[in-house]
Image 1 (cartoon, one colour):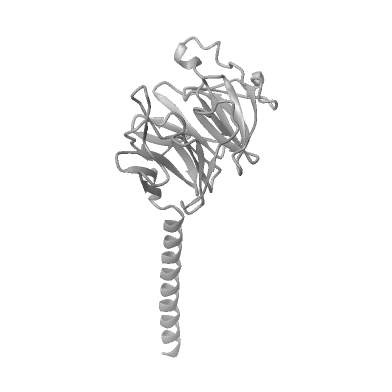
Image 2 (cartoon, rainbow, N blue to C red):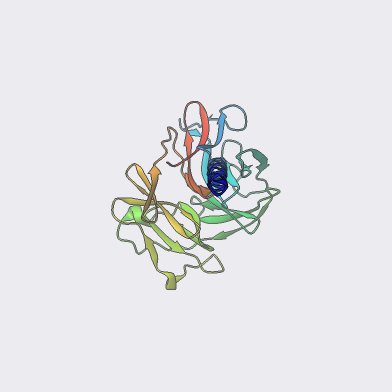
Length: 259
């Protein structure tokens, strides 16, 4: 009898402990990957700015180093930094650029510098990622000139695959050498399959857009995130081990988890 009672008590305690452990893990995971990483209405940090041509400009691109996220705010030429919880930790004006109204179509953060791809001047512009001060600019190679299709020769995207910088357009990418001024011919051309677009990179894996779905390599991550206003650069990034997408609508700015 005592033996039976002790076994029953041990079992109930184990079940309770296991339940608490599971609930704790679930809560922790939920906290790490919230459905909304960032949300803000227009008129605070970000604004919709009409142009003389009748267009509307605001955020150009999203980038993440895995924990922090960065947004290039073209409306006031600033780099907005979001910490790992999605709170704004800095809004850094870009200063001293030879292109005073437009830093670039897309950007990355690497080794403490913000690198902007400027397709108008065909240059990569370097800024200090902490102060926003302009450092230098270099010409980038036309690494897709041999592509048969004109649309595949366009260069309007810059990204990081692993630790390598790539340039391209979502359908084709090529790798830069260490000088960043020459194409790495030995690496070849990274091509998206027919009907697909490379929406970004995440720890050496490709973020692929196929119709209304987002894949990481060949694994489906979820449904694509819609946006009312166009985003010229990257809209998807890996943040806190999940894939998030940038959405601009009539209400404001959101970075939402792909699910």
